[in-house]
Image 1 (cartoon, rainbow, N blue to C red):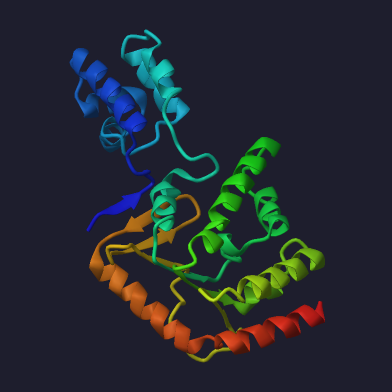
Image 2: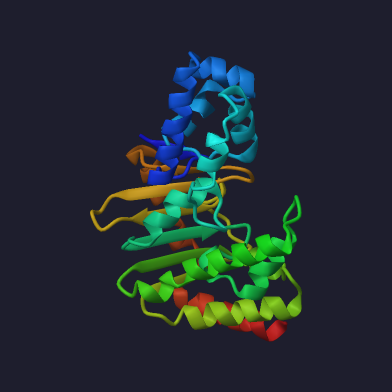
Length: 274
């Protein structure tokens, strides 16, 4: 039932860094709980770092360095820890699974899904981030998003399904020109034979997706994963029970949303009104 929250999939560099932390901790005769108390982190965080499941932040590295001998070993080792730039820690494993998925399903009620965003729309979202991002961070984030978007054309045998709330488009994030470009992009992308884009109308008496966004994917081995994202954290879901619930909700929403053809008609009307 593994649920991954706030932790990227382990990598060689993460495991190596974790082993260094564990070795130094044991050399100083400290338990994980004792080290956590001294550096201001929970024993669970210490365990996650040592097992290579958590990206160590600068605060953890500096505090642990001082406690574990102040030799500079942790500072140097942390410089070799790898992560995919521009993607939140908790999103790392999902992004890797996306690259081999044979089915990708997304329901979004807050914004246009990342895979379908134009550069202007994405940059507006980055510009609105709080705390504010630096120019460099915005460039890194957009580069990562643009790289992910290549999946739509690099995976022609993957079924992509998107359900987007009408109100997301009515909001006109970024202004009229950005909104117009976003709709144009949806219309063009939706012509690809492996991509279905449906709009959930603003007025709908019954709605199976009121609990929030849904992301589902199927691997080549026919294993399904789900992903939940909050404002400051995310969860990778592998337990079949909650995934089954999300799949049932998504299937019902496909019935409740406009058909692909009717969604195109609505998008064209919205485009004409801008």
